[in-house]
Amino acid sequence: MGTYAGVDLGATHIRAIIGDESGTPISSYKTETPRGPNGIAVTEAVLDALREACAAADIEPTDVVAAGIGSFGPLDLAEGIVENPANLPDTIDRIPLTGPVENLLGTSRVYLHNDANAGAIGERFYADRNPDDMIYLTISSGVGAGVVVDGNVLSGWDGNAGEVGHLTIDPHGFMTCGCGHDGHWEAYCSGENIPRYATQLHREDPVETALPLDTEGFSAADVFEYAGEDDFASHVLDQVCHWNAIGVANMVHSYAPLVIYVGGAVAMNNPEQVLDPIRNRLDDMVMSNIPDIQLTNLGDDVGVRGALASALTEGTGDPSKGV
Ligand SMILES: [Zn+2]
Image (cartoon, rainbow, N blue to C red; front, top):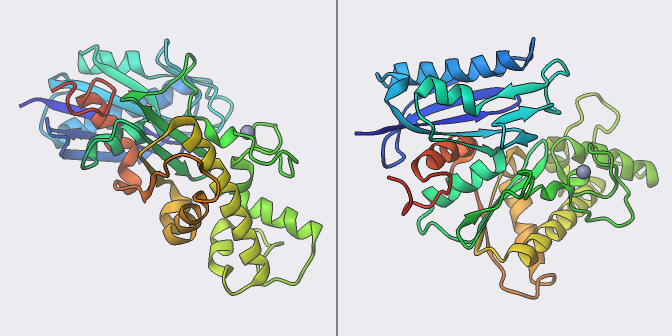
């Protein structure tokens, strides 16, 4: 029986799993992502995670038939590396991935994706009907999407297709995005930015609120918790939902998905508060078919399961491909 590997390289954790030909996990391993001294240290940690997962499955790394990697970006797909990741210290400039993993496993069948594309591949593979037209949307510390159209996982020439967090949704540019530009979706709706947005709205209109706006620990979780009880918190959440709906409507018109799976901590921790308002607003915004909006089926494992699914399907998530 063939064994396959998936790796999820995240800013805080590295996960590796070994699975069988059906995509059922056999073993897994999780470790912290090193913060230095350099990119090679991160590469080594990825290789170690794979070795540990193989050991736990009682196989040699060279027994692995194929592997998928889902990683934070930005990626250079041609080189098989991450280059100058924004969410790790500056000393980490270049993280080689594809080449070293190929060497460890003794196979050239190693598929590298950004994490949102890995998520889309996972949702597609593990979904009941393996949709050819679908989106995986993550609302987490950032906002991003993996997009499958006509059965093709979109990557774009530089691998940056689906960077929907940087769609301009607010032409007035009330908020500035981490990328430096104004009015981008992520600047209003990511877990990091919801509290910034609330603070900024309150500066414009300093009404009374129970939200702990000026405390260090003020977070998106507070906004979700107080919404419904506190008028200002409800207003902030309503605005966040408004921008989410605009972003989703733009994706619907761009890609015509049958289903949009939503993951990421913000959505997973507050599924009704995030998903219902999107569902309710799309009718008024979309001229074409309205897709199903569903919470991810794979939870926190969506990246690593997607990477495993990629290994099984030649990077596509389509079960008719590969094994
Ligand atoms: Zn941006």
